[in-house]
Length: 226
Image (cartoon, rainbow, N blue to C red; front, side):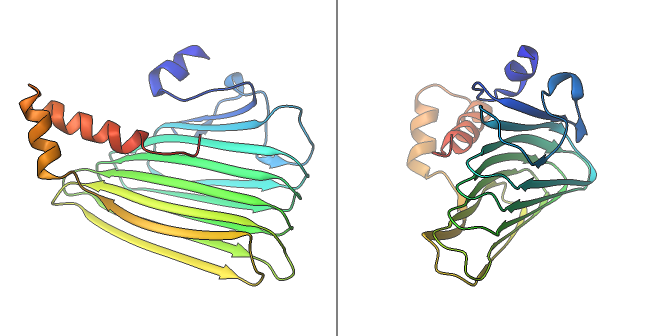
């Protein structure tokens, strides 16, 4: 599996794996066969979703056991219209889902995330970063739902974008909270380098293309999830 890690620069750790490449499940790279987590594992579960996508793609992740850590690392790009729908249901008490999604959009991309806390003491955190290239259209939707009589949940759904001047960005965050959470955060932001930062990089000898690459890498790597 090393070639996959090297090509996509995925941060790895000892885990059970579920790997998708270009939206297609890769059994030869996976130690698990299903996104339905119905038993406990001694190691965290790492869902790895990489490559180029187009059309409608879905990830339905169901955590139904307690005390299970689940991570998602997604690095994708699209050159044709694509829709990625991620639906997380957490019914496992003291189980957690933490995800980081990085997308390069060259066309029209819609990402919709829905995190449903259906048991107390659950965690769902997802950080989505989109680099929106020239003339692209990005629609980023996220909903966090905490059911009634569910206590001490930790919810955080983030969106951020680094966009070309000609790109179109639409954020649509929502929260459906029927119980007091431990924390419930929801954010959407546009990243833009300052003129001072750009001039500093150019004065360091970087070309316009190299400055753009440095800014993209800085934007992608600015995350404290994992």
